[in-house]
Length: 202
Image 1 (cartoon, one colour):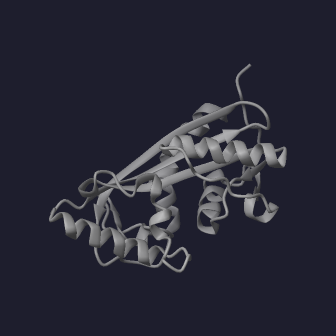
Image 2: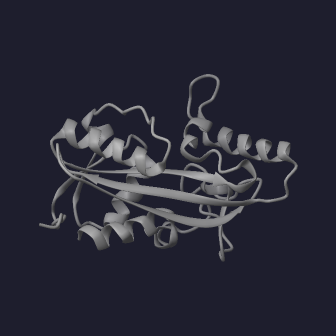
């Protein structure tokens, strides 16, 4: 029997990142009641996998097994061509300051400085999003979406979160940091991944 998610199902969003939680909730479009791992006090597992899909599955599995509910998890990041795909799965770690805080302004400066050190004029980049849905002690379904774009420095806009201010999606005139949230949700890497997930499960 095919796996399905029925409307009204309670889902645990396996994230402690408020920006990511709100984007996932928006993509779910009111279909489900969403609880966050942060609100439930669930621990964050160490993201030890080498791929976005691997980390999404790891987080979804941990949240589902700890909560006893179906869980949805995202692992996403920025892959910069001039940096050989970095920061990639380490995108959040690049935001960790020497003081132990998480600061994406710091991370964006780090990306700009790393590109400058390469001497490359290539500013192409790709956002990746892997989404995984896990059933407690059961099956997992995972998909991945991407969106291509160009990096702009300094960053523009205060909307979105993470690396959004420096990412200009292909064919657009506004960065994800400037873009109306509804527009971003229509074209983002998460939107692409969610469309695949919807086709698989809804």
